[in-house]
Length: 212
Ligand code: FE
Image (cartoon, rainbow, N blue to C red):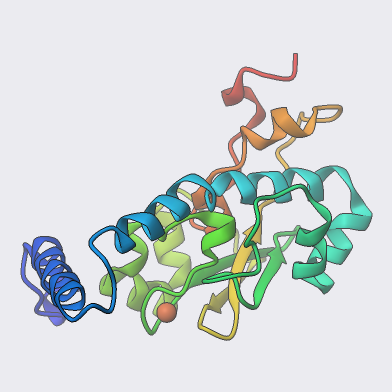
């Protein structure tokens, strides 16, 4: 599969070199200053993190009205929670949640590039941008999910959502068994970034060591 794409082994360092060259040029032309990129990255690394997504999912698991609104009007639901400023700002436009349910598993990819709901999930992981992952997840999602440890029975429908600048999807995973009565804070520990992309399930209750 990999050989179809012909990209070099050290493409990550090549990308980094290109970005540095572009940044240097923009600084030289006076478009940005030498601290602009670091400031933007710092904001997305400290404020716009998967912690926000975990809070949203934990609330959806414990509040059916919130869950219904989250699917119907995701920005309105997000607005109700105490989350950092800027949730609807840059890279947070047109966020939409899709919910796993019995018989339906959702998977989010971006076939074109790397569109991602940054305010909810943080910066996109490197593998999310990988051409092989993007192509295979679109073409054979069931096989990819099995390889990633999410085997689905034949009756379960896989819905693949293609994120773009017009829709940035994230998944509300299924609440794990044995978590009745857990607090939102305890439930948040079970929600991973991967589960909100759909390449994993929420962690089983037994692995969290909470909720006794
Ligand atoms: Fe994209």
